[in-house]
Image 1: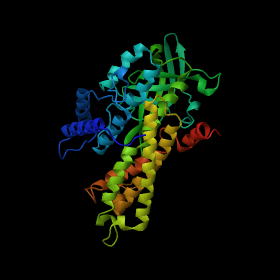
Image 2: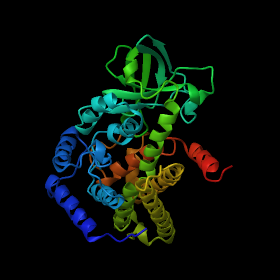
Image 3: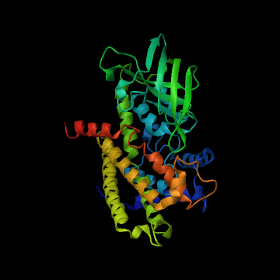
Image 4: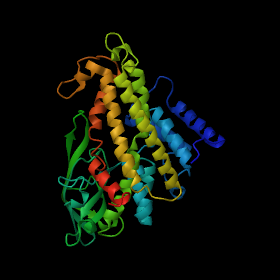
Length: 392
């Protein structure tokens, strides 16, 4: 694997930087609002880069792994999303490429590309999160519709999503994995109810979704009835590969170095970065982050050569979330007492207090506690690696 960029790749990096500079003028930060997302997405559409991981046959730009790598690093460093559209482009679209009918591809992919429709993922349930094969949401076929009853939980973005890709149980007489069917359902369908779940960081990102006699046309089934487990596993490998969080961790590392080099982060007028214990922990996590970055690069090259991520996605997800959690802990340590007002035991400061980043990074620390559960718990990832890598 050659880690040196070619002249063409360096030219592409400059083109990416020029695009970012055109969208983010000096002094303007991307705030994550729909207005900022729409402006960024319009620029990507005009450039032909809106769905940069799509195959060329479905409108993708045909980037090499090196170009994808450059894109992710440059956009992350600028605080921009690599693509707009939530779970549609990165999670549902690969399933549609591989298993969707031509009619389904023609119906759903254009809206994903144009960001006209947002999707959420209906996987986890009470008692069937990490053990996804234990899900109990039923879909009973009645003629040309499935009638869905049950409950999903921890559903990210369900309160703003237009549609859901959902795993349902259509058979109980066989082994659990064989009785699961993959359905696409409109969130405006009668019988769908969304209830907020407020997380420890105070955000409304998660939801409880209940289905009471929800009627889903059979034409919205992906692939064959009872084969949803196969399709879901493919989707999860894409999700977990994306949860290595390498770009985020590199940004955190840079921010921590700056924060730990201020007198605020030290004691008795010193700087925290000069503390041997802190410096040692920061160096140790940086070494692991660099090793993770190399593993991510190897995975990208193998995928480009036609291989599926497989168990490597679990390695990336497991180590990536661990590194993010350790880095956010170090960031909170830099904030010192200025982190305390942002913890859930308080109501938050009435006016700005401490450095501008203290609240943001404390909230990120709290949010990161869930990273080792979301997308498959650490225990699940270790089981996958034991089975498929160690052959235990």
